[in-house]
Length: 499
Image 1 (spheres, rainbow, N blue to C red):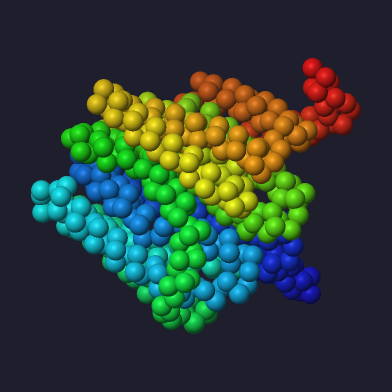
Image 2: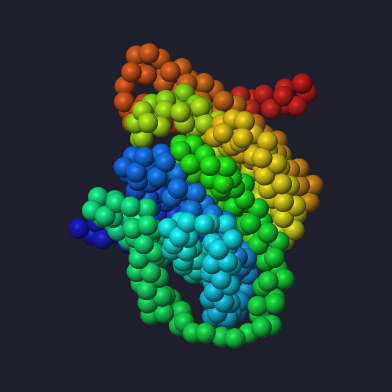
């Protein structure tokens, strides 16, 4: 009984207290991973249900409207949340500025809603689409407000609170969404369901934060707003450019009249977003420590960013290979034969998911080192290239052209982020440890590919294939890495350098 109390106490400290850097990163990663798995699974299930029940055409209309309002929703944040995380992590007194930033966010929400209303008048003739866009706009704006609350919790390394909040947010959305789909199925009703879920979540978030975390109030502080906007404006444009190359393809296909193709494309893009989700949550755990380490210790900063890069590589390579091999089974399992034209688009887009993993550490390193203006130019180039490629490729190749444009954009941005990080932040890549991990990953993925692609296994359900692939890859990576580590210790690293 005494041992049980001790073990319970240890578990409590591991998962609810910040003891050391490694333990805190582990704790935050576990909580955020738990939240991401639950929320992404719930929301992804809802999107799959909507796509299957409404069909490619109706789902395409909803996806087009949602992409349009997400594009305008960038105005409601302007990069303030990301800068707040950095500033709150470094200076405790900065947390007192939270109420001033909250007031600014409410003002930005009203401005965004006004811009959306004007855009509806100019771009849409049908009143039904105008209503859907306006309803979804309020939903998106409310969700962007929660980013500031999450920024505060991330700076305090209290990701357990953020995890619970995100799970609650997903529960509201999915519960109401499924209810609408099965009992009142229409695009407009589904949009209203999204809005109701956002309002319910906002009420509970404000109440919890006010009573448990920080006393909420409104503060008119123009000097504070100028201070943060002067720091965040590069990230504001970064956010806009990021949304452009994520959403502009769906918006452009919608305006080109390719509604059904938009449904096919968004169905597979949802899978890509689902698979790329771990990249964001891992970065959220690393980022506060990167910000502090850059200020305090160059050696520790390089060590943390090195761990970050290796973690992303270990996840990215098997994801891409497995996605390409299992694409036909994945699409048929999730959406049915009605979405079979999207298989090739998925096989192309899964490469983009891999590049998202690989570029994220370099992106975060630049932000932590106060080089967000350089990120601005990378994102700007990416947005311009993506728009140009979409204009050229979508009219000819439809959703497949949009997929190719997305992959080219992410690859180009990955290269630019690496070059800038090496030059300005002095990030070291080809270390001995990185070489060991890279060789181990390549060999483990090759063995995973052989096992999964065998006819004996390929006839199994896609769920079993994923489980088998994960087990084979993990075991092979562990064994191979241990063996290669011994080789490097025996002088294999010197051989590589000489060659």
